[in-house]
Amino acid sequence: MSTDNPLSADTPMSTDNPLSADTPMSTDTPMTGGIVTPAVLEWVGRVRPGAVVAQCTVRPLAGGAVARRVERVTLHLTDGGEPLELVRKDAPGLEIAGLRAAQAIRRAGGAIPELVACGDGWLITTLAPGSALDWGDAVPANLFDTLAELHARYLGDASLPGVIPRVTADWFRGLCLGWVEPRLREHAGRHPAETMRRARALVGRAARLPAVAAVLAELPATLVHGDVHPGNVLVEAGQATLIDWGNSRVGPTALDLANLEAADSPSVARYARTWERVTGMPLPSVVIELGYRWAALQLPVQYLPWMLEHRSTGDVEAALDRVEQALDLG
Image (cartoon, rainbow, N blue to C red; front, side, top):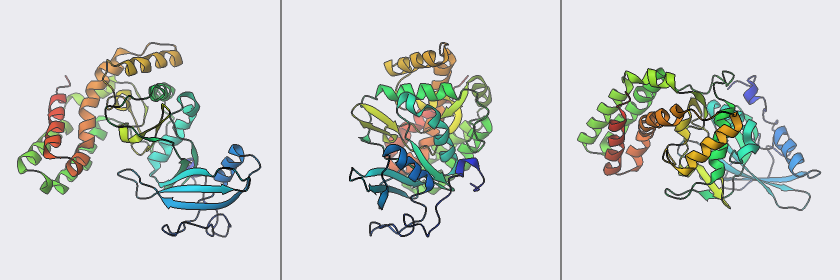
């Protein structure tokens, strides 16, 4: 993003700042400028009034499947208290914009990480406590409260930055043909030719499905995280934090629900109650009923490149079964 964009106004400190280029570092990570920005110092002042950053240590942190660099930033303060822990990662503009917009409801459900600073291609958040959820584990209720708050806050909101993609028929066609289909060629040698032929045929059918435009026109759109799966949900003491906003979208709310819970689950019922409390109106039935049918198509298509690279042929075939079943959107 350009530096005059309001989403990247927090530009890095100059390298002659003693808490930037010359900060002591872990020897296994080269020093990068702009770690302790003015926004970070302002955040420290709010969290620990009167304390001064004495030292900053940066170490590699295991990240998601996309981020090129993720680092754990430890701020050692002069007040003698425990260090403060942050995460700095390379991030595209849409991730910064999505997480920045989500700050509006950060305190409501408690599952949004705090965005401390951001700039051109990077962001710094608080380090989320806990460990990733496992498939089949109970999902903390605060995640569904947070998602309901987020979706209600930005329902139909045209003010969301244009850098966040809109889930439209054209966008979905681009996902299928511009992203997924090239990855099929890239990973063709990992699975039998018959499986790959089937994958190409189904992705092509999905891209050209006539019902897509009508279905998406019927579904209310809002800001969604776009990649809610157990690996992006960190849990500590029964509370969830939702990390990795690099798939932020403006689209149907069910995209944030369908990976974790069935449409008729108690968790989705809780989501609906929180929605009604926030908006004063019942959750429209189409949001769940038709929304889950849409998610059943988009999500397995969206994750197919990852499945091809990391899963067995049996798992890939199962994903293709789901795509084939979901093609009946009529």
